[in-house]
Image (cartoon, rainbow, N blue to C red; front, side):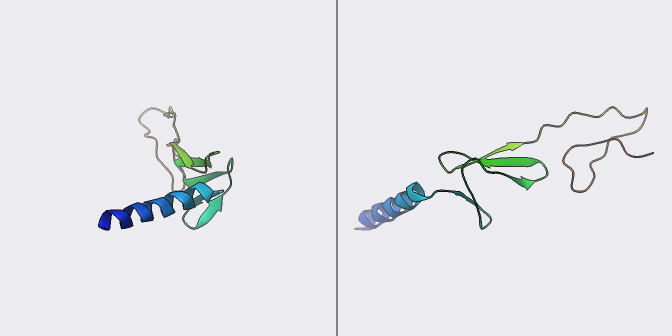
Length: 84
């Protein structure tokens, strides 16, 4: 009997997901093709199957002046040379 309840719950969840016409992230809905950011380093898009597809931002390493180390500023994802 427990197995039957589990199967019934699974079917309901699957049906709800199949009927969804958007992606849901932190209470906001996104339409297929709509792009959004999770944070400064992660970009996402709701795909045609209503699933979020996210990628990490790839950063180039900046070439700063001799003995100057790159920094990551608040709100940025990629390092940059500090203002000297």
